[in-house]
Amino acid sequence: MKKLFEPVTIKNVTAKNRIGLPPMVCFNWTGDDGYITDKSMRHYKEIAKGGVGLIVTEAFGIDPKAKVNNCAAGLWEDDQIDCVAKIVDAVHQENVPIILQILHPGLVGYGSLVPPKDYLPKTLEVYADENGKTLKTKGPSAYSCEFPFDGLRREVEPLSIDEIHEIQVKFTDACVRAHKAGADGVELHGCHFYLISQFMNTRINKRTDAYGKTPSKFLTELIHMVRQAVGPDFIIGVRLGIFEPTLQDGVDNAKAVEQAGADYLHMSFGFMTESDMEKPSEYPFNEFIYGAQVIKENTSIPVFAVNGIDSPELAEAILERTDVDMCFVGTGHLINYQWATDARLGKDVGRCLHCSYCMWRANPDRCPGVKKFKKDKSEQ
Image (cartoon, rainbow, N blue to C red; front, side, top):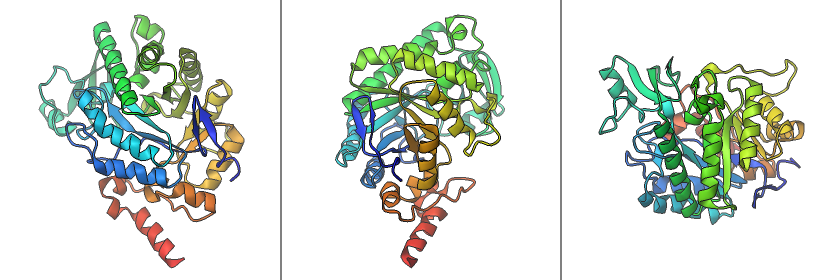
């Protein structure tokens, strides 16, 4: 595990190893008001204590009327800074850097409903039932789709130029709050079907103005705005879709983001139902790792790989083969908060059993992967 435990520097911050925690929502740990809880603080502290090199938190929303779910964490008002600072301080006490992910869901959320509501429903289904299982939302341009994660149809109206600028300002304000909370940086969520991904993908973004002719314009403008607001030393990373819709589009987007001043790229899937994923038939890893390797070959800033990295041996092989800078281990850290330390010591790190619905997020005590890991440890 030589390369996995080498330090790596992102801008002016050094991670002690190349193991990262990717953003994962802890459902029902946050109230409808978006205020993060002490339960979340303890969660991140224990993972930091377990030896991880870098933590990127679950996504924080920028607007209470633009939420991806009813229990989404928020950084849309100044009073939320103190509770977020508790998480930052807890992680820093373990000498681990922490980056806050910042999100707007765009057309897939229920915060861009048309016409606007004065309240937010508890679930998407409440509002959808009123509209025949169809959510009327807003995004870059007119579009219609059935969202795979909830089965609800979206009928999308295009955002106006004024609305685009308002969203950019709210993104920037949330990043300033992250800076005030003491975080080492922010990660602009530009994949997983959400708003930035929608702008980047030309099968979703069919605008005829400047935001359509140059799909990266929304994001590159935003990077400049955030940089001006937070100063030169704060990390600005981007979680970016690889196939948006093609790999070449992903490369072009990555180059534009690098030129705009992003400090790293965290590669994942974009608007997946409008993506052409690819990899060579003989390639030993999945499409997402292949895409991250190609992005790394075409940029000069740190690039992070994620998706299906479930063992130290796999992480080491990816680092050696692809030259990416970090491997992010998601559900492995849910199964075992000590994943990084156990990997370094050559111990069993446990393994996610890939339930059809993540039992850990519903109730960690019922997670079969955690139960099996604890049982195996007790029998050693």
